[in-house]
Image (tube, rainbow, N blue to C red; front, side):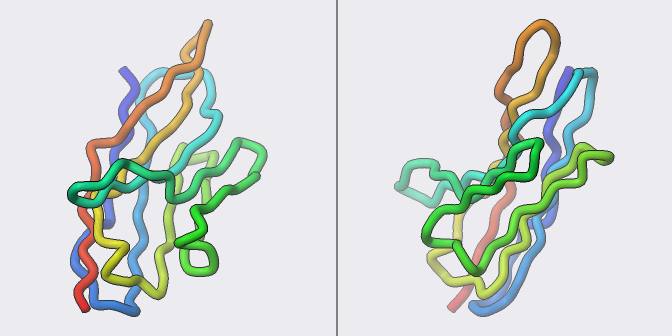
Length: 119
């Protein structure tokens, strides 16, 4: 069974930094896209950043220049380096991946990790 396990959330002051990690485990053939979404109280889940297997990246406008997504294919792990954090970045952050379990691909979600930015 495929699982995504996240770590790295917590409480940080405005202007601070955090690194989130998400590792995929289980039996699968390959991983296509991996990325991060977030959901603040009373709001819809939104894309923060994602990256394809080929290294293309995509960022929400609100985090461009502050967040960086990276991926270690050998470890089946994706990272989110969040810098210059703002109170409005407070949310539960979810890892997302599109993983190939032959003969098809599936979407998977992590359990979520809380990021709280204090002003």
